[in-house]
Length: 144
Image 1 (cartoon, helix red, strand yellow):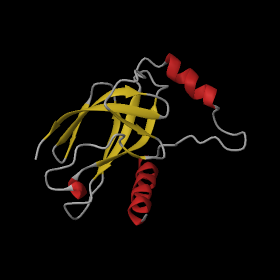
Image 2: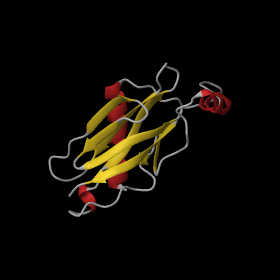
Image 3: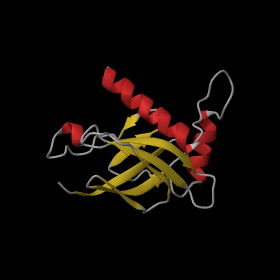
Image 4: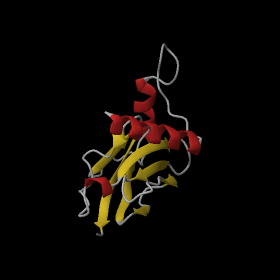
């Protein structure tokens, strides 16, 4: 439970640092589910393709990345800091971290477009889908 709270806090801090607003409908405010479906329907970057998925307000990805040969605490976690599907080139911002090696340092990847590749501690990922409230990617390589 403590680990989940720490991970949730990291995602919250990363979102705050990036200045990205995450939509959450509450008591009639904010976008309706139909608004998200509509923006996804007109967003050519929302392909639904990718072996791994991250969504707002969740630590991911789903499924988890393959465990590092050094152990589970060396395996990166991925948080979705936000998406921008309304711009000419839809983008996604991600935060990656691993508990080991110490000190554990988060790394932010801002405004990634479709097909862009990032690398974090030997794991290389390529963005394959950007939707209003989620993103998907492929694991290109895992070096140990």
